Image 1 (tube, rainbow, N blue to C red):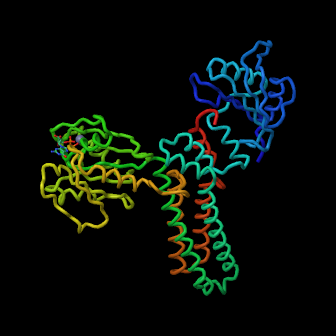
Image 2: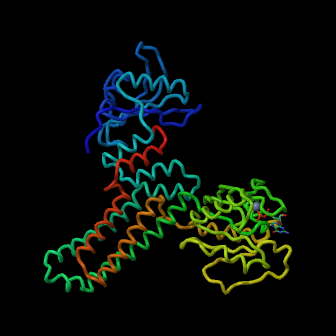
Image 3: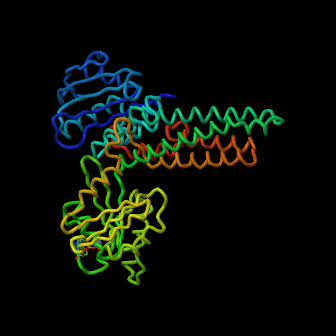
Amino acid sequence: MTQPADTIAAIASAPGAAGVGVLRVSGPAASAIAQALLGRPPQPRHAHFAAFRDGAGELIDRGLLLHFPAPASYTGEHVLELQGHGSAVLLDALLRRVCELGARLARPGEFTERAFLNGKLDLAQAEAVADLIAARSQAGARAALQSMEGVFSRKVGALLQSLIALRVHIEAAIDFPEEEIDFLADPAIAARLERLRAELAELLREAQRGLRLNDGLKVAIVGRPNAGKSSLLNALAGSERAIVTPIAGTTRDVLRESLSLDGIALELADTAGLRDTDDEVEREGVRRAHGELQRADVALLVTTAADCAADLAFFDALPVGVERIVLINKIDLDQAPARHSQCAGMHWLWASAKTGAGLDALREHLKRLAGAGSGEGAFSARRRHVLALQQVGALLDRTAAILTGSRAGELAAEELRQAQHALGEITGSYSSDDLLGAIFSSFCIGK
Ligand code: GDP
Ligand code: ZN
């Protein structure tokens, strides 16, 4: 990679008064800036106690100066770190001084972007840096750390190697057209492709769990008006966030609540009743509820023993992969709750949003779905990673169909080439400037 010619600087610590504030500089001028501030060449990776002075020799602050010469630094460039008092005024003055000495203000995420461009970390690892900083739960932070350490990237890399090997194998056959048909019928090729598909399916499952650990489990609460959706949301959130009223159709918008259950992040959305309605405002609410279901990890149907058979229709247009929970509410009113154990693929619970009975079982189930106890190797992932893996899955399905059908080697090789590309987008071996821009601009400044 080419070294960017300029030197960037930013306050790396959070704004506001604090014990210590950190300013970070990266680029070719970092060494000269360090020397100018210290008055002599800094020792690599050594904490110098220094007086930071402005251009007129006036004292700005005293603090620590650390120099990390390239390439053994976060960005792979010369890096200078200044630790002073955590005062916005002092740090601003120090930043101005550093810019006078040849640095410019860094864009959000520019340090990590340079680390990526210099091969210090791949794209999935760089994203994990931002996810680690933004983590809202213990489990999420642990998972982001795993991804930052390269656990996810190594799995993607291993899959990529198998994929490339298979593609090379098939392309070799294309070069000998008279043997191609027989060659592609070779059970060893089919077996390798099957193994690849199984590995991909496993990685996709792990990545989906990683996405939940990262983003939180998205739960859409659905059900007819007055089923007790808002009451349930309130009971889980432990507040009066949603308006509970006995008048049908009160929850017109989608109400959201984030909560952490034993270190697991949940995103709950209370939707309006999904039903045909003539009321304009309510119709909009219903439309949003449908949208909410498309994005959800879990559809939580709140119903009663009497309505539940009819209400199962709420699950009708649900995308595959969405977990289904049927919660029979108001058991405090109904002494003989109906059991529908014959319905497979759904988790059944009996509860009362009013008394709180049965809600612990719901919490436990949600925690399990969110990936609680997913253990040591669990890594974080982003939606774009999951989408890329799903795309690879579809391409491998097509490859398999070609191998058993037309046996056109060129077509199979082309599917595999696209799959290779989609996998490479995860770690950034193939990535557009637009993608990089979108990813790094969402970072905070100074990271
Ligand atoms: P939503 O329209 O689905 O959001 O329903 P609400 O949460 O607004 O509740 C509708 C009515 O049912 C309110 O009067 C609640 O107090 C009542 N309700 C909700 N859950 C229970 C429950 O478990 N037991 C009883 N007895 N009433 C409940
Ligand atoms: Zn409601």
